[in-house]
Length: 347
Image 1 (cartoon, rainbow, N blue to C red):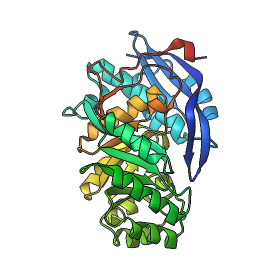
Image 2: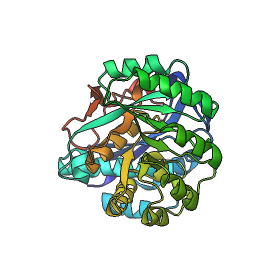
Image 3: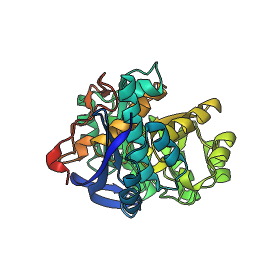
């Protein structure tokens, strides 16, 4: 089987509400879909969606033209030898994996791991912690979510702890919270915030330090039973050292930031060997990126709730996003990603 044709489609998807974090706000999600067509008629899809300010499009727009005529092994070797931006690499890696899984007759998750469960528990993505967070949390409970994620680091430590207590007081037993500071705090503010979480049902805190280093992260983790997690700082740190030292208890894997599902899976396996857990999340991706992250999460099969329930933030999408019911994303059994495009959204 050889790649016969390669196309890139631009998309621009408005959000229903601005996405806020300590790293900045955005109200649209833009990117490029890569479509690889084989001489057997299969279509493989990948998503290239750098976060605002990130680079990738030029690399992908020029690089993909060299794929027609190659078989999947040759294309993968060329990808492995390239120095592409992570989001562009994610698109190519996903599209090639999609084709390989389709050729094998397997859903991508089961091509990655034959024992993968295609039902993946998800956390609710509630956005910023503020005075309206209680209402959003209660709505997520009605939708069946058991783990709720909030963005923190957007207001003062004392104010956010007060809002967080209001949310916790409104939750029934057994519901857990995840928090993402997006590198908002100094070490002293992070210590104050973590100390204030005592007695609250918080299971994970992502990226607490504005200037993360493994020594300071290790010290913070030793002060709390809550799992601290690395996310967007992973590309900046020594990954091998971060895993071997177990500076934190969890890694958050975003295929869009790491270079694709297979790179992310390799990282997860390394972390697992050292006793670290991994959570897969999107970067508020299109349906293609969400599907890639979902199949990766299913392949991990670690029983954790993953950050995949983000498609509801989009006004529209490039195709049908995976279905979520009762807080569980249910992937279909069709081979590959299972993506069906909405051609009206592609240009």
